[in-house]
Image (tube, rainbow, N blue to C red; front, side, top):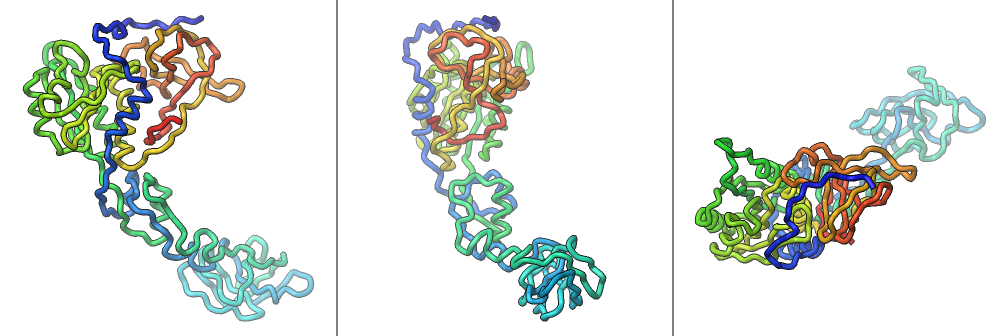
Length: 424
């Protein structure tokens, strides 16, 4: 068994015997507190990427809405191809894309370009590679078949067909489809209003202070999910000041995300301040490593999710809980894919009891094609370097005691983007 160095944190030996909430149950609690947003914004379709469609949209006309040429070539009538070829036809004109199409006279051909409307009287388009263009005439070498190189009206989408369903997070594909069908402005769910607050006297550049990594990271994560993020700054370890911030923020936001002061230390005032401001805590302490002190609260119509202060813990808690809360606000709930499978590149021992999330990197591929992954770092939740260098997160079940080299393990690559919240 290979050894992975672990730094002892002592966080499993708590004097506070509050039962730990399993991760899946904690996700259900966090998401169950959310009321989906109902207000909508009207936006130009080219600015709709990353927004969630509020109302299903249907095709107002067929696509394509007229028969058009799929190739550069010549529009012809099949009745002109009697006997054996090649066949000589006079060229009676040219049809460009966007131009009106004349009627094809029997015994002639019309030069046509890709996307141009197919003229009446034409049965096929002969691609230019299969004929000799001689200017005033064309020599066709291969007998065409009916419908060759013609895109029929409505062959992609019929009038009235569903284009995009309500609740879809739009990307460039949807924007192109909607714009191509004439939708210039669309209704989208308004952005969730998320406030981000860091806590701690240690945050700052003076003396023994440290730079605040969490607030910029959490603001960026919120904005990356389409939320309207507000920076509430840094609150010192001061019960009265935290209470004032909560009171001033009541009903201004859909969700307040805090980092730090969520545990049971003498200066962990976030939960007491929330209660003092008239709020409530609905769940606290999750069977999660790193990130056990996560809590979920409410302040009138504003939700509060408290994340730990260690950066890796804050990141993991955000991805597990806040991401799904934002998804539920946008109406993106529902079943999601389970973690993908990977193969452990080395072995290590672990203490069971909490589901563990470890930054990892892909170091190869197994014979069956699965990624071979190895954990990064030394188990510390105070650094983001392993996360920054990683390709994803290894997920270890709460009951597992060890991982052996070659074991199949759960793996969540960073390239996945999943806002839904159920895992089965």
